[in-house]
Image (cartoon, rainbow, N blue to C red; front, side, top):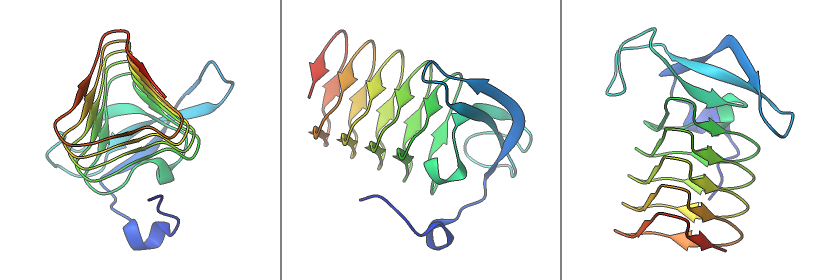
Amino acid sequence: MNYTNKKDREVKHFKLTNETIINESGIKLFRIELTIDCRWGKKGDKRGFVETEENLFDNAMVYGDAMVFGNAQISGDAKVYGDALVYGDALVSGDAKVFGNAKVFGNAQIFGDAMVFGDAMISGNARLYGDVMVFGNEVIE
C-alpha cells in the first residue's frame, strides 16, 4: 500500500529544515519542523528525521531522533519516535507506533494499533496488525 502520487496525499503539517544528518548507511536525512499548530505540537516545533517529504503522510509524525528513509512511508495517525528506524519499503500506518531502538524495514507493514518497541526488528514481508505488541529483542521476518 505504498502511495506514489504525492499530490493526492499531500498534507503540509511539516517541512524539511536545513538541519541534516548522515545516517549509518550514508543517506542524508532532514529534520522536520511543524508548519501549523496541530496534534503533534506548535508551529515551529522540530521533530524527527526523514529522507524526503514522501516518507510522511496524513497525520503521521516522526519524533526525537527517529529516522525514516528509503521508500518507507508513515501514514494515518502512526508515530515513529525515540531512536527508531523505519526504512526500505516498510509501511507504518493506522495508529501504529514504532519506538525505542526498534527497526522496521524490508517490505514489513505495521498497522492498526500494533506497537513495535525496545530492540525489536521487523523485516522481510512481515505484517503486524491489530493490538499486537513486539518488544525486547524479538526479531520477526
